[in-house]
Length: 496
Image (tube, rainbow, N blue to C red; front, side, top):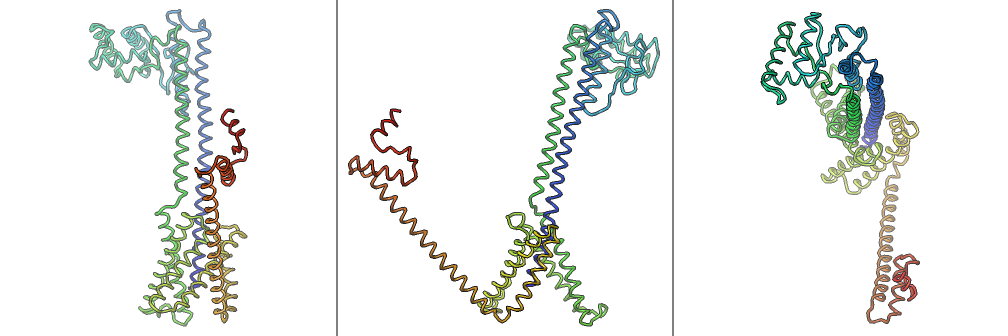
């Protein structure tokens, strides 16, 4: 049985090694979550700065209206072009994407106004949806570029969509709606492309690009960018918190994890037992090829028992180390003692051992478990390498204890006597301490009872009551400065 104590310490070392590896692994993952969160937030800050840079480009462009092409009535056309490019780029870079729109390679009076994702666009911002569509058709008839798309005001595009869906906007007459629908059909007929493929809505409405209000439009876009950036930052932080919460939850024990550890320990214990039993038989002179059915049954049964015990032991140690404050060596000692005493209890119940033998062997078992645990703990402290330090400490303690135990041999009864005397002396000390505590409680209660009766004795005169009240206050620990001892103290307390 004592051999199991030391084997259990090896199990404890394995469980402790797993716990340390698990903690280190989770801590490393938590650190990576923090690093990733900071990296993502810094990257988003840079994206936000780049997005605001495009808004600044727009403000710089608007700061000198004289350089904008056209008359006061038509300058909004180039304003719409710059809004399209800068706003689209601002949204793209804010979300960590590359710029999608550009003026690079586009002449200021070229057929196209800008390029979006490699496609040439001509922007048409004319007052009135029908007029805008007319300019689209005229431009196509002039250049006949089948690879070019057109950008029109967002609100006008919605009007076209509504009419094509059979809904006439309230601001239009049926005649105007028919004219718009006819113009759409002409565009599709001339270009050979569907309206949705050829014409795309701008980011802005027609009235938002006018010189008198475009400054406010830019501010509105900038505010939207600020709000969107905050949502992205909040999302980054939320994701980090979610990952952290999941990892923190993994720190705790789980039934699945305990089952895996128990299963692994059972497999290892069964395998080692199989090898050990086979080796012992070979050492006795029996070759493996000569093993008969009984030999293999013996090996199988022994390995099954060893595996079951190893699994139960490892599972129990895992539970104790994760649900209590016990370290692995002492958890192993508790499991060893508990399982050993359970076996002794069965032997005692079936009269295989006497009560004296039960007490003696139980004391020796618990002593061995304590020595093994102490050895493992000291080894782990002196050699702070997971598993290795604990095993070395356990092996060393086993060697020392084996030597001492061999020398104790004949003195077993004397050891039992010493242990019994020590136990009896502890019980006497406990009884005496218990009596002392009860006496103190009774004395204190009697004193408090006397003071309370004196302080609230309605038949006593006021001077006696006052003195008794002061004594009671002092006894229960009232601050001296707060005790009212005479009339002067009463006047000072009530009259301030």
